[in-house]
Image 1 (cartoon, rainbow, N blue to C red):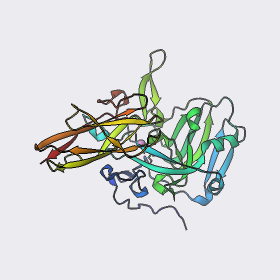
Image 2 (cartoon, rainbow, N blue to C red):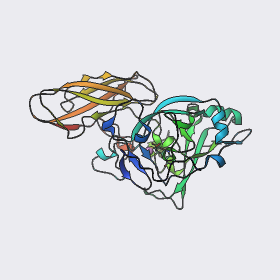
Image 3 (cartoon, rainbow, N blue to C red):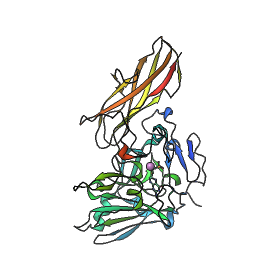
Image 4 (cartoon, helix red, strand yellow):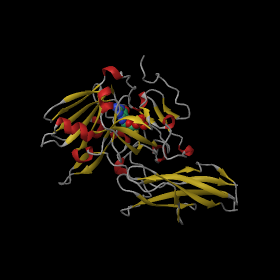
Length: 360
Ligand SMILES: Nc1nc2c(c(=O)[nH]1)N[C@H]1C(S)=C(S)[C@@H](COP(=O)(O)O)O[C@H]1N2
Ligand SMILES: [Mo]
């Protein structure tokens, strides 16, 4: 009997953004525990999720290495493992808040979740293969394939694949468990890469190949899509791959247009995250950014994961519409911007924006 989850599992409680392929949003207003329960963890898939069998599954480590090899799922499970929390955020999270409205999955706040990931450090596999001195990137290859939807559309099918610089690859986990449970089909069963601190697209699901490259990879998923325009050293425009998550804070409660009783206290609740930097401060404004006050953190400062925070708002007696904003600062002194950086197009939406509530 196959142990892969049933096709079309209900995913009760998630917000449907797309049915096929499955794109489901975590209801961010339900943020509570540090770890997102598996059945509420957002799902972002470009193609139909493949059904892989644990018994004839192999991961190939090959390319610029001394001894390429294939390892079975069962063998991987016997290797020394690590468990580490990481927040995954889709690079398109918050897209619905862009004005004017843009194409792409209309994520609100919840294309972000946190889990404890268990797996084998990629470095253990690389050691076994013996990486050649001229290696420059690691390519993660998956077995899901299809025709992308965003223009310009490449001819024929495009397999999902993403590369990473060698330096970052050291931090990658080849994960087979999420919050202590086997990965579900939609989250990449049997194996996925977890790239801490990078936007979700880097954490390749249904991983079948780890290829060591001697030249930078320029595939669809990091040039055409999940890429942005930058300039090279000669000031020529060039595409660069999206990578690190940008510093961000978000308000989980209250929700947009929530009614709030006047003259009482209200617990504003949210989370903030960066990449390999830690979030040092979050401020909250209840007057559309005119004045700011510091919030209290619930979680300690750690790289790669969110920090939940809360703020006790003494709601004014005066009825009307109030605009709440939160703003994060990291340990390097970077502050969450108040405008979307247009270079990133429909991605990296991390500016502060107002949550309007109605006090009555
Ligand atoms: N093979 C494969 N890996 C993938 C994707 C995909 O479509 N195919 N989507 C990526 C994107 S865009 C995100 S945001 C994360 C989402 O992971 P999740 O569905 O477990 O939340 O997976 C990434 N890995
Ligand atoms: Mo994503």
